[in-house]
Length: 129
Image (cartoon, rainbow, N blue to C red; front, side):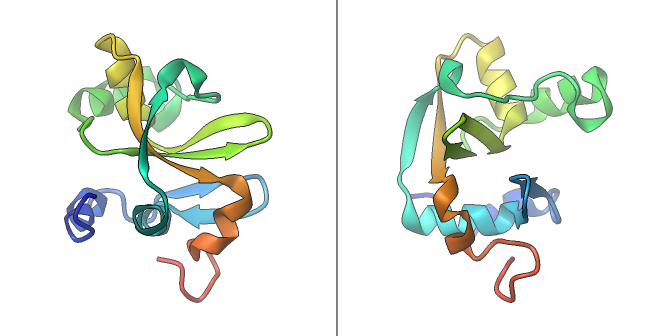
């Protein structure tokens, strides 16, 4: 298990980052905190992940490429699994870097969409991070 307090260092540059499921917004920090305590890290085939944004995020391809090059692929990504497939909540840059280097799998916390509200990470909840 990743030391919970070392994750704080990861979030220093991502404070306020969110994931939206079409109804609510969730704090990425809160999702990581909950996932670390409640779901195991799994190895997920990159080709099985739907809805990966690897070209247009962060203001265009150049900015995306810069952030991808700097990403640390040792950190697990956060994925949300629902009836439509597996969605990336956090980790597009890491997935793009792994794919570019020929990796077939990514280390991930997979949160079932039905459990999102259980995470306490919903923006507007009193206990959201």
